[in-house]
Length: 547
Ligand code: F6P
Image 1 (cartoon, rainbow, N blue to C red):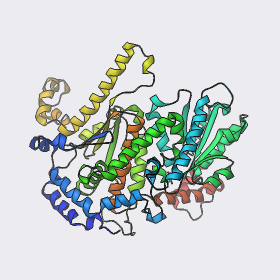
Image 2 (image 1 turned 90 degrees about the vertical axis):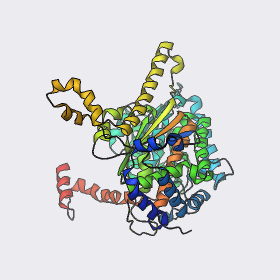
Image 3 (image 1 turned 180 degrees about the horizontal axis):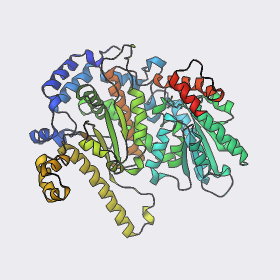
Image 4 (image 1 turned 60 degrees about the vertical axis):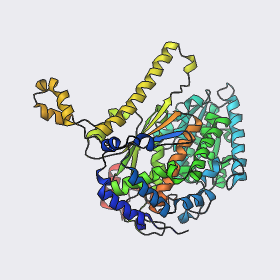
């Protein structure tokens, strides 16, 4: 399958012309004034996820050119190749089939394997959950997931997000950092007879995970733990590696599941333990609903396609270097970290599929914090700083609290009001970013206080002026449920694929993480011996200081 790289298309040239003529100077306030239908024109919904893209820096002409680009780059054929299991991860010679993990039986490649493993895992999960929190030795109270990157971030994000659905007898802990402070803080809070350790690693060779797993096993034995086979399980593609470590219960997955796309596989074991069979299946079903939308919707109404196109427009034409994720739901507090790996490990590349250096930018920097906390930290810079940084608000219409039924009506009312406060803050920030505040408005506001400040009214007003015209997207879920969260994550996965495909890169390898890993292996013994021969002067001096 050969399609041109984005910069070699007719549509790219047209986009350049459009950018120079209109795109550079787009002002959201003018766009809304000129087009009364703009809010509905740029409102999209799929699988229960609504996206308001009307406050993005684009207009109808931009989107026409972008859709032309998608067609010319063969995005539909590329998507079909992904979903059919063609080996599109060329540098590793692999298929990319995370979508097969959430497809109903018989509807995707590897279906028998996927469903057999899923059934085994869910049967195990139900066994643990049946006695979880109980008094007998061996009843599990605490689940400690030891894994990093894709073997950590998905479960660590989903379990708190779906807190109202979590088994009340189970506590979940996530240990990822090779820094022993991470593991030690968890071990202080658990007892061996009531703890299940999950060693989660696609390769079962990752230095951090192996170090934490060894330390956890040592702690377990020293604390008088019995029955390692019951208290340590593994989720991995390397079943032999897990067996060599001494783990006999292993839930497998396959090399065609990328680490950052693996929460739907056995890497999702903590999620399944937390939620149980039905809700875990609902999470998969939500993702599958988004897969169907991505597979079937025409480009003009295809949500992941729109968002992938926006990424290209922002990065390569508008020149934005980063975007923020602001989930206005405390349960989604780890979503920015999850999306950092998904988007940046996938699309932080600078050669195309043929190894040719790219003449244009790829992944931007992704970061974020939940609202309203971020408002009291970095929003100052978003509103009045010198860079334009698009923001993605995620709002959830209805709150779901785990203990709600036990609350008095008065407390329920207070909590309900807090949710309205949360939503009003999210809405207001998007509004403020777009509208800003003119010098004239600032002057009016400033007059009463100027005298006491000792500054001239117009000077003070300049400090209180907001340029506005700062773009954002607002994503809305009705409730945060397994289905809606599954759909939301799948939306971001497919968006990543779309922008990566347009950029002509392989979104499914991660060679960029290897160099640092190799160098740290060389440095580890040097920290013990002090041998700095052959090292650069900076590293040698730091080793001297750290010893
Ligand atoms: O950081 C690189 C990476 O390979 C990620 O892609 C992966 O999710 C993580 O390390 C953990 O790898 P593993 O699951 O093999 O332990």
